[in-house]
Image (cartoon, helix red, strand yellow):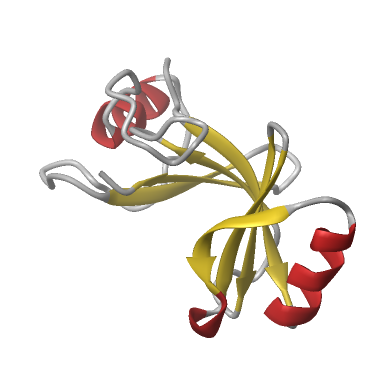
Length: 122
């Protein structure tokens, strides 16, 4: 299964303080808009998303359709196919995206309660 780009999404209290902290660790902002409360940061191959007021908890994120640089990759499975395969494997796979086209998202929760976001933008 090709899941696309991977990052860790952090639920932050102050987007500006968090951005400044991760910049000190060597990350740079490559996508996002801090005025809207989000920033995608990269240091080498490592990527994190900073999200203020969007998520209750930190989560793992897969972006079907995107490569590691946030460009369409044409290799990942469509989000609807991923959701269908996960459900066929017996997993609860969030709100139904079947029957839609283009962007979509759903969340799967692992056995320890960690949320995994599948978020397709293309």
